[in-house]
Length: 168
Image (tube, rainbow, N blue to C red; front, side, top):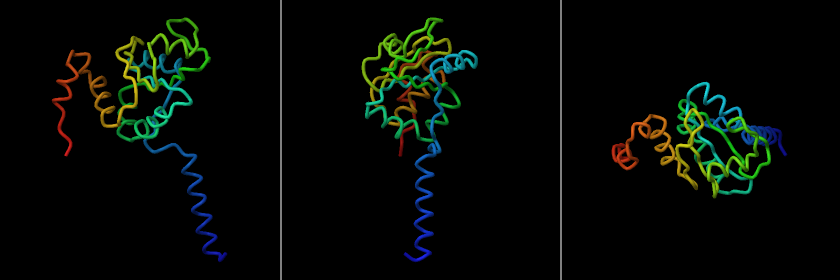
């Protein structure tokens, strides 16, 4: 192998390895349950809880297609505290000053399928569960509905959606 080819191959390999290990440019910053609930209360921000399992293909797709998107991750960072909760974990978390497993907490939120996105207000009270994979554009719309306060003001979802500009 000629030297320029080796250099090119080495550079390509280095780039590929660096890209594989680096978080995506728009990657969402996730917190643990205990850290997230404390931060939400302190900052008076709502929470987005991504309830997942390790084996769930649609959960992985949400991570890759939705949470990694720059506009989604930036909106989450600006308006929400983002938490990952493994619905099958026996890790101890604290809810209302009671220790329980992540699995039990997911059950308390009435999660029955994966992924499920749970929205909580800053005090940790459940606002909504949204089961299943949500395409990024729809998810961003949902984030804005809650994050901009339309849900709190009593605006109906269908009215909120009807007011949105149509995509070209």
